[in-house]
Image 1 (cartoon, rainbow, N blue to C red):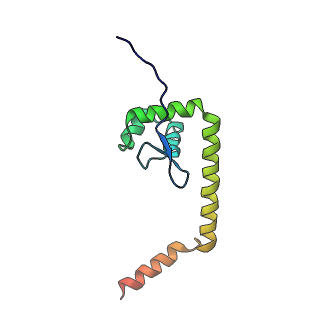
Image 2 (image 1 turned 180 degrees about the vertical axis):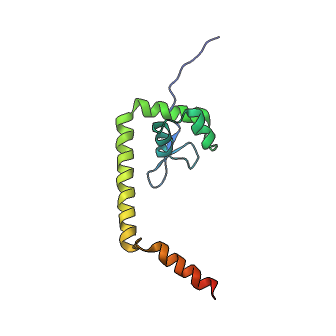
Image 3 (image 1 turned 30 degrees about the vertical axis):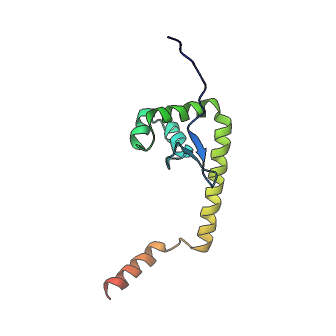
Length: 112
């Protein structure tokens, strides 16, 4: 029996927004790497996200470990963009007093 060893590309694909997802799922590279950094095992990650297989989780972790600097740069940019979007939304929709406004709205609906 002859075994052929061939390199496989990681199961990552960028969507239209440039977000890397695992396989054909909605699970992002950010999610898998974040869980791994938080100490979750590959088995725990696969259990928590049944849309991806254990093999895919291991492949993503292996890719991360082999390309840590590049993945960390990608994650840093994603975090910066998330912060920018959050700040823009907070400028448009002031979060101060949101709880009081929601309660007042609910009370107004209950009395109607």
